[in-house]
Image (cartoon, rainbow, N blue to C red; front, top):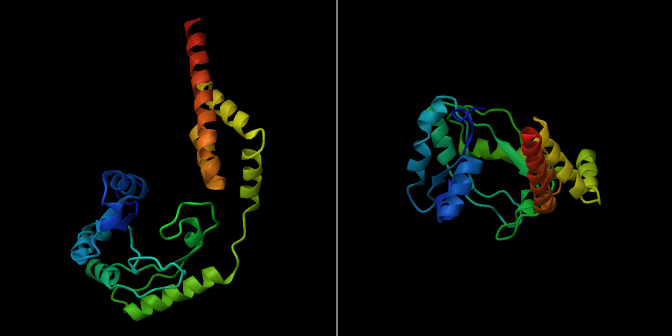
Length: 222
């Protein structure tokens, strides 16, 4: 999606916009916009009415926070008011595994995540009906154990083996000599499969890019 139609994500203003570095991360990586939780939040949400009408998706977390035990909390009505004001449907989403991925007051770790997208609900749907729809999705996503991908396991086994670092170096070296082999693609796969290996692989890719770039300059000057 282009920037005009890419999803905008409502984020807690008192946390994600409380410091400059968090604000930059939220805006640039997640297309976040601030939603105040201590008054004024409804106005923040309604400011997105025009963009919703123009076709942009707005992602909101109606609980406004996360429960430490993973249970579904009570819903605020802001998302439903915004949808009714813009005349657009509400699409419920169920997510499982994020509690382990980033525990509340904890650190980011590797975890499997499952996302289930439900049928659109009409504008003007009641909070009870919306919560029931999300509850059904939540129960469905958490009913079965999360299964690891065979592809991810294979990628992880290669990345964490002795060939992982040389692979990053050679891939980046080749990229510097012959477009379009891109170390960014390799690093994206690594970050998804083995997040903890990303810094080490990034250094290997950086070294490979520098070596390949210097060789390319030498060949061009010869």
